[in-house]
Image (cartoon, rainbow, N blue to C red; front, side, top):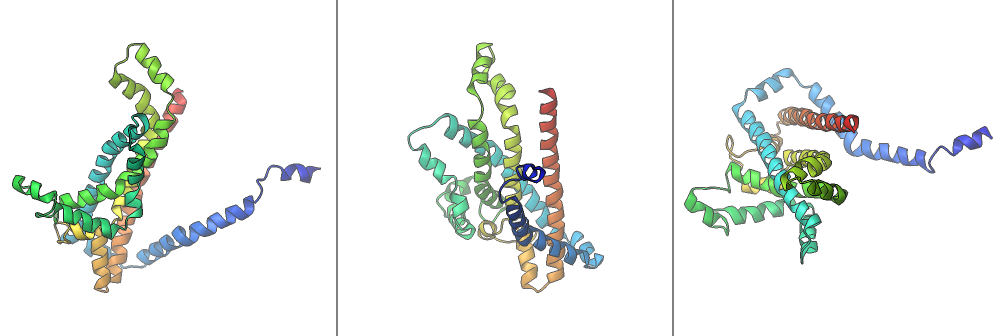
Length: 279
């Protein structure tokens, strides 16, 4: 009897599912990252020192992280507007627009890079209108931001849509009936409900932008000290058979990305815990 009672507490196939999950995660994520960590720790510290004092490396890291933060911030604002429009303000053709949101997922990044470059060069469809104002998008840091914004938008929209759909409109109606202004309703009712989703979408878009390569390689121009990002610098070191430098630079970028994402997740966890305590 005791053995039969204990068996009821286990889900059918839990052991097999857990083993498959851990094996799959290990093969795709844990083992490659572990190899990178072991390889990076075996390097001489002079390799890291030479990278950190190299102006070219510093410029690439600075451009990568700043462009990723700016692109993720732009996606956070406009991604919310797009998600709000699709969820709360449906219009004829909204399903087509909703399907187009996933286009950066399906489109090869190299194709999107070529398309963006064709649009924003000086003779391009959009670049020709920016040229008279002295705005250079292609082969400039602005082009990097445009490419990173393009590939990161779906992460924010797809994260915010379920959160907006789950908001009970009765709370908004109650706030309006009590005389709250639209801004007050958003700040007190809507924003607290979607804040965790906004942080998640921002972190996903930021993480995606940090490792982007294909869509940036064309529109940036790959100019050292100007438009060269970390992934391009790593590929360049690999092509020159500088495997130690590429490994060290990848480890530095991975560590910096992990610390930033950890800070974002800790902020989200602290906010969620605060909401639970006040609730």
